[in-house]
Amino acid sequence: MHEKISDAVAAQAFHRLVAHLQHRKDVQNIDLMGHSGFCRNCLADWIMAADNEGGGNMDKGEARAIIHGMPMAEWKEKYQNPASDEQLVKMQESLAKNA
Image 1 (cartoon, rainbow, N blue to C red):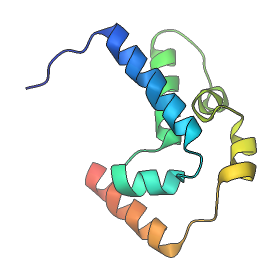
Image 2 (cartoon, one colour):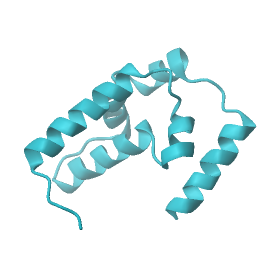
Image 3 (cartoon, rainbow, N blue to C red):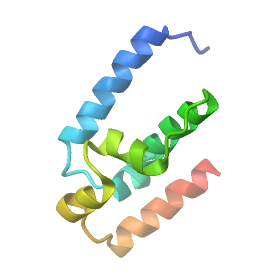
Image 4 (cartoon, one colour):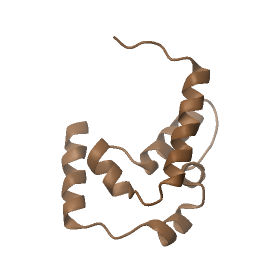
């Protein structure tokens, strides 16, 4: 059974998750996707959707900068490595589980 989490607790946990993901720049988004079925970009998309559903007008770039702690282009240049064939296969397998 799912127990209700207060908005204050959820917000605090969310902020810790974002800080953790910003700190762990060594963990590639494709590895997050392969293991968990979501990554920093997914989290940013969820933030954008929640903002827009609440009447805001956040765009994808703004949302990703919040989650990455910098503009996406800067993140990619500094931290993103090319995906290996193994990473791509694992990500596709994970995405299939989410479908």
